[in-house]
Length: 68
Image 1 (cartoon, rainbow, N blue to C red):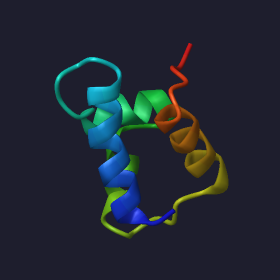
Image 2: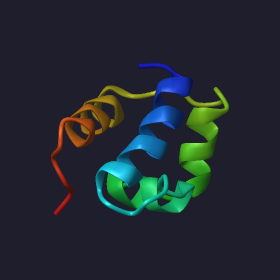
Image 3: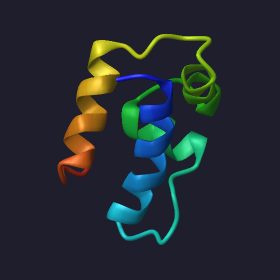
Image 4: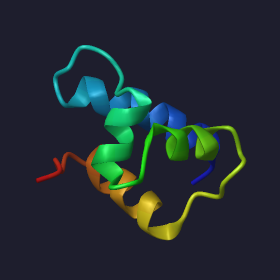
């Protein structure tokens, strides 16, 4: 998974969860249990690599799993 995949997933997951919009950076950070929206922004800008756990969670969310 690369940085553009993360951006596309963030936008798709919000719609998938019935929000009618993509997730904000801070919403995505909470769903991924990251420290802040800045962490997601850093991934999307390519300043931080996409870790295996983040990639796995995103794939689960895209498959229909919702966070607790």
